[in-house]
Image (cartoon, rainbow, N blue to C red; front, side, top):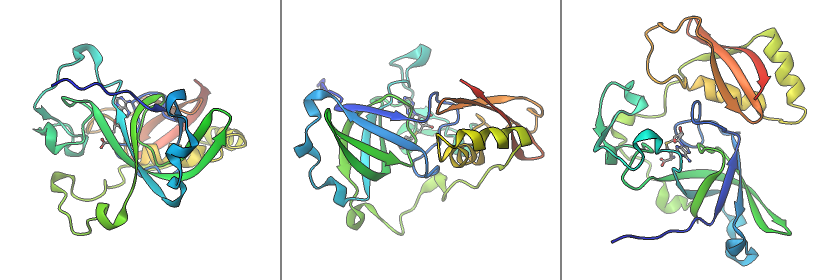
Length: 237
Ligand code: SAH
């Protein structure tokens, strides 16, 4: 049975490319998202009473999970949590590479703005790429969705902070200047790097290698020194 599903809107976020995006929601609490509905769904009635909820589930399309093997999926994946060297079943993972590339993230609903083009949702704690198609929104229900003693298998609790994060003198001056326009920039960069976005454990083999992460309008240059992420500079992306 084929199903046809139409996105209801687009989520704009600070994450302009996949590298460095947190691997689950709320790991970077200040990471903002703005949900704009398509005209057909941009109805004030459709979000009535939503502001009573502090958090919502976003159901979305992993629209950039294709790559060169677009459409292909494999029954086993290598979760970053296991260092990228152990496989688990795709249905035991939250990997974007699944038969139906659908993601779900519970994020904070900060406000609902009323605009001439319908309601706009202001969200935070997102783990979602900029311009991701949104399929559905549902309120988070603590009485049912919180399961205090649930087992979490190989995930085994929240990720351990991977890296300390320091800003060079230059990067610190740049981030302070930019924060006049983007108040949470430093918190977002720090949160992204703390989770160690590097693909898999490098065994120290990447000493001196300069990485870039794109966030907001900025290309953040950083490298790892003595187990710390050192932010070198912020450049115009
Ligand atoms: N919380 C969701 C997503 C977990 S995977 C879920 O459990 O379903 C999170 C990763 O998905 C991010 O690190 C990012 O690399 C990737 N991602 C986010 N948005 C994406 C998109 N639109 N297309 C492809 N990959 C995306």
